Length: 85
Image 1 (cartoon, rainbow, N blue to C red):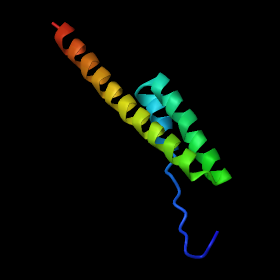
Image 2 (cartoon, one colour; image 1 turned 60 degrees about the vertical axis):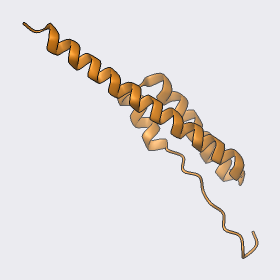
Image 3 (tube, rainbow, N blue to C red; image 1 turned 180 degrees about the horizontal axis):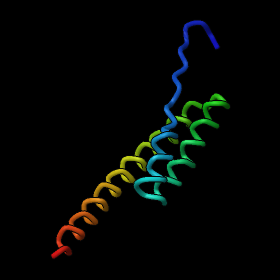
């Protein structure tokens, strides 16, 4: 690498992906974990373009998974609150 170049590292969002898998939305969380691993592999190989693409995908899957999990929790709480007499 030349002295004037700065290499940015794309975030992998692996911790967030694991949280989403365990607490929010299993299918989207697993897909996010796969993308997070792709980020780490691409970064290790020095492929910053592929790492950035996988990072964006992992972030998007995590956001969607978190929103789905929150909506599901709200629905469950609403059903529980209305079913008690």
